[in-house]
Length: 221
Image: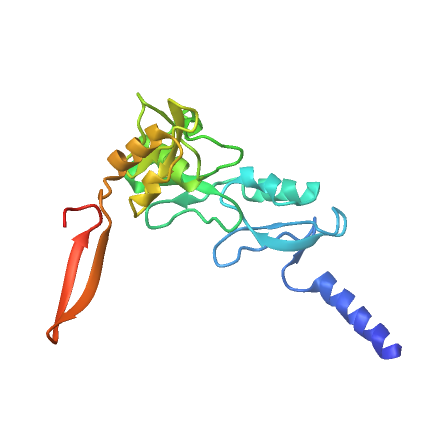
C-alpha cells in the first residue's frame, strides 16, 4: 500500500510539473516552430496540456474543449497558417482550404466550418483558385442543372429531375448505365467521356497454336 501511495504521488507530481503541461501562469512553448495552446482539460485554475495550433481559429470551437481551452486556442492560434500548392493546410484537426488571397503564390488557411454547398464558397469573396480550393478541400456538394452543367471530370446526377448535384466520374460505362435518372445517364456518358462498349478477351487453341482474341461486347461478330 505504501508503494502504491508513492506511485500515485509520483504520477500526480509528474502531471503537475511534467513537460508540456500548462496553466494560466505557464503558457505553452512553440513546438517545431508551430504555436501551441493550452487545452485547460483540468479547468481554468488547474490548467491542462499543450496542443498544436489549428490552422484557423474558427476551428477551435469544434475540438470539444472546455470554455477556457477554446478561448486559449482562439487567442494563441489567432493568426491563420499560410498555405500554398507546396504547403497545404493541415487537416489533422479539421477541414480547411487555402484561400489563395496572394494569387498563385498562395494565401492562408480558412476553416470549412458549416459550409455545405459549393455555391457558398462563391459567396465568400474568394479569388477563383480560392473558391476551387474551398469546394474541393471542404468536400462540398455542387448544384447543377440542364442549363448549368458540372465542372470537368464530374456529371450531374439530376436527383431532382432537371436539377441535382455534381458527382465524380467513374472508370466504367456501367456506372453511368446503372443510374436511376435518364438525364443523369446521358450527362454521365457525355461528361465523363466513357467508352460505349466493354472490352473483353478470350484465349483458345487451334491445331496446337495459341491465339488471343480481342473484341467488344455489343460489336458485330
